Image (cartoon, rainbow, N blue to C red):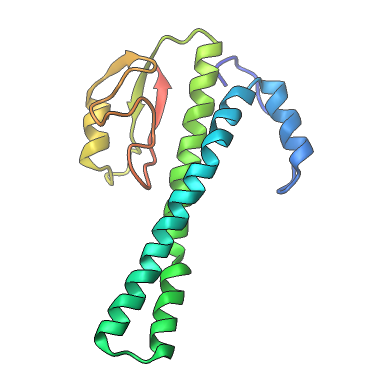
Amino acid sequence: MTTGTTSNLNSWQPGGAPAAQAGIEDHGTGPALAMLSLGAGATAAALTASRIKDAAKALADGTAAGDTPRTIGAAMHAALADPDRAYAAAVTETTRAIAAGAADGYRRNGVARGRWQTEPDGHVCPVCEANAAAGTLPLGSTYPSGDTYPPAHPRCRCAVFPA
């Protein structure tokens, strides 16, 4: 996008890894994808550990309350199958992927400065408001949250735009 070219995604279908790889190579975004891939295992492990803690809490709470095994099992299942948690992970990790790809593209195209952009919908947290208020910074600089790029927190919907 920084070069004014557009992506042709007509040949890509969900699950179509060869077409996706070709698009990645065409646009030179391989380094960002590699960086994300290196962190994927740690991200998956953290998500798994969090879900296991939720199930363990349901087990402990149900046992302490004297619930039946069926009730405890249902609570554990609900903790593990929570669609809200899955959505939060999807938003957060999509934001991370977009930010990594954008940062790589900016660097390759000589963009030196950026600004933290929040969603213009009135549902912005104080952490991201402070990052946006920091104004234009050299790309890769640390924003008030301590982050160089989004996400600053789970469900973060921000982006760093070239300035």
